[in-house]
Length: 233
Image (cartoon, rainbow, N blue to C red; front, side, top):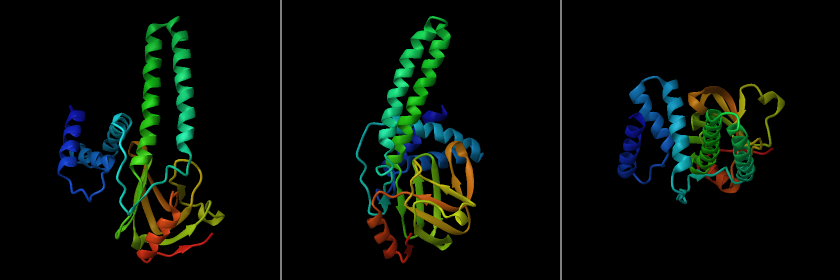
């Protein structure tokens, strides 16, 4: 019943929303569930599962990017990693399934369901990376690493933005790389601690983050338009 209600509300919202507003289904699901459940960590857990299913099972389409949106999935090479993981998952699914059937039909069915969930998780996670780019606005930087991390950073809280392959030794305290894989392009330091929201309603308080951007030239040009200085490595 809850899932059906959320789907209906998302459908209504998508029909009536301002088309200049970003289509961020995950944020909208979390907002709706927070209003209904009233307990943020439970709402975060349920929203994460519903969003995984949404991104994994929705029909493929090419999103229309606005000038303020900056993707981060291409440079990471995560698509190739996903392909390898899916091939391994399907090979393990069929091989282990037939072995388990000789011992227990129930165990084989349970294993098949777990494997199916793992495939949905992998596909939903990757498609969310494509669907939820970072966004630069007049108000600040919206960091969206798929369903893994979400963080809103107002410009008045930004201490520095520096091109970097990783944090310096003195920057590791309160630091996390909000990227699909290990590589980063920028370290962003804050004037005070800010919260990043992770999988299943988790929360991490940070002083610095690392992000990756596919089009660094366009990203830095947009930052300069807003009066933000980017330091070199």
